[in-house]
Image (cartoon, rainbow, N blue to C red):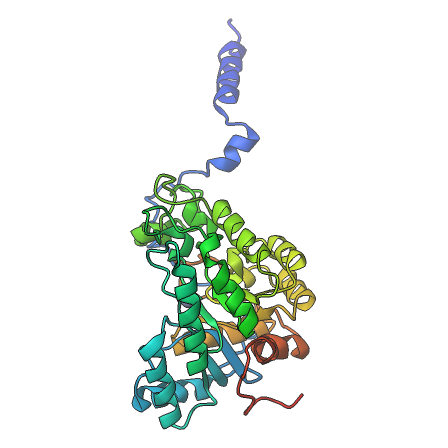
Length: 379
Ligand SMILES: [Zn+2]
């Protein structure tokens, strides 16, 4: 009788040949036997039960360095914004929306008329369109006039600077264009910070494939795709231009917006701080990166507590408490407010009071000239 072992051996060999290698198996997850949901449809409810602490108000009065309130052109709007600020314990908001000349003066007057001159400070925008010979002197003169009218900083310089703004000759305006040197020197002489938003999350400059952490956001918003190298510089190119701009102006105070989009690589931000003692940052719109590395982020905040300012970016009063909760509590595994920024959960950093005080108000009081001091703890 023929042994059955030959077909069995063949079957084993065949199975081995068809079995993916260990590494291959990790890359290719098992296929479910029922149709899987899309990433939009899959909304699992966490079963984790742990202590929760809601933080509707900041523990200390805060300055929102990256404020985008509505146009503060009438006392009614001012009063509405102040009411929201009071609920959150926001003591002072920087108006970082572009404003210069008459639009700047109109807001400063409305805030005074409403009796809230100690709750807002104003930054001046720069007209960077069609830069050519002589533009630098013109922009610097407007900046001096705006500072005389009451502005105490430059900004927010939007990401279009570097990404898309063209010069008069049609070429892209690079951040380190020498024509603008006189503007940054003027800021240094006037002692006002320059608040600059450069690029966007590095993933936006990478191909839109299934390994991209921001796939959903890029799929939702076509305008956030910068991977076409014929149209946009790379992330690293923009950062190199920005660093050359900073290097030329050591007497100017720079605030790089959004933690320079290095919040997912804090070592890189630390290297920027170490290289340039005149560089600061704010935390607008990158909470999802801090909240997924609470211990590393806490150590970073403790080390660089003199260089980090609170800033929120878009003015959605119900979103501020997410920041207070990440900074002030040790809560675990809680939701962020936008699933297209982050599909993961957040953890609290449990920052010590002395770090919170610097980040919430101390550093802003130090680097913004003529800051109102009413409402802040003494010292
Ligand atoms: Zn902004």
